[in-house]
Image (cartoon, rainbow over all chains, first blue to last red; front, side, top):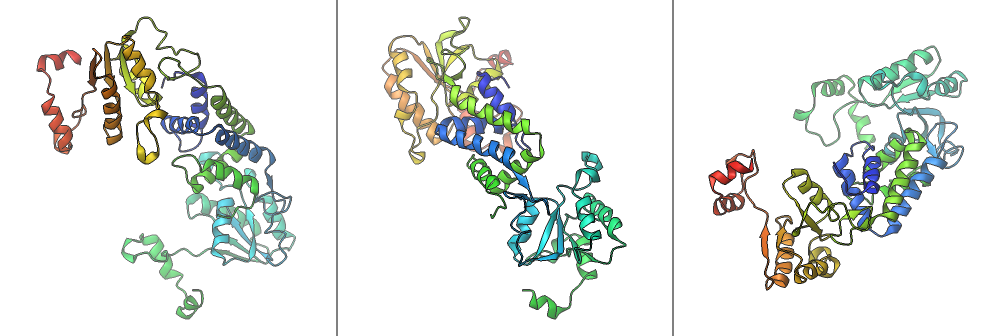
Length: 206
Length: 206
């Protein structure tokens, strides 16, 4: 791509470094900003900069937060003995939206993935293991995605806390609510039969 | 969506104002920036700001440029009597890529579209008409997209220059090179038969 202006070329190059955005989309976004009032670009730039510079991570659960300890961890109404292990802030938001979880979280910041160069030392695993060893936890729920990387991460953490006297569970895998059985893959369907729940219990959860 | 941080909420709100980017994608982009070195966000913000503040438009063709007159308009090797009328900078780039056009451009900055609230006065039409009336032009090629808005814009301009002694043409519509005939829509196929070209001429153009 040849640009008639170095300024627009630079902007397109920077925008297209974002994941899922190619040069053509970047050019479309740049031209959109040029057509909008100058304020929009100013606000966007400022919001990005202040987010990157001033963001904090909760000391306890490593979730993104505006204070040293996040709102969930500082809420005394929640069960601090019950920890849900998740990959990132999006998973925290998704689980909070269900309204079904009253414990606290532990955000790993990723999954162990040698292909992407992510090892255990880059994740917030040590602080989780320490919490467990200090006897502050009664149950851990693994809520990582059901991929090879997720399973590896689960197993890596499990090995380090296996000798502690706590319950270790993982979120249930099964057919999504509203899904047709015939379109489900066999692994999911198999697990949903293997881990079937008493019918009366399933009624109460609704 | 409830965010655990006002900073990230603000960034997501600003990013999601860009066209085609919803809140979820915006959050993904924000989290990506947080994982990358701080420099990337700084460079992105600076590039956007300096593009928006310092960008210039060519005095002659209204293309985006770093100088008062763009490189194409200041190139004396190009035919300044032949003007190709396009919607925006992306069309200039696309036509320049073909290497088939040695005239200059006139960038309208959009199409007449009452639904989107774009009237003729918001487009660079007057300066084009003036150029024609001053006798600086021998041929105008309309290269707007083949939509109702494009056709309306073509016709609006044509009416104002119809009494001038110049050639007014429009780019050929027809079957794309490499396309199967059976999948072409009937309007396109009909036009390609109506505006057929002598076979020997088509050989020379390859």
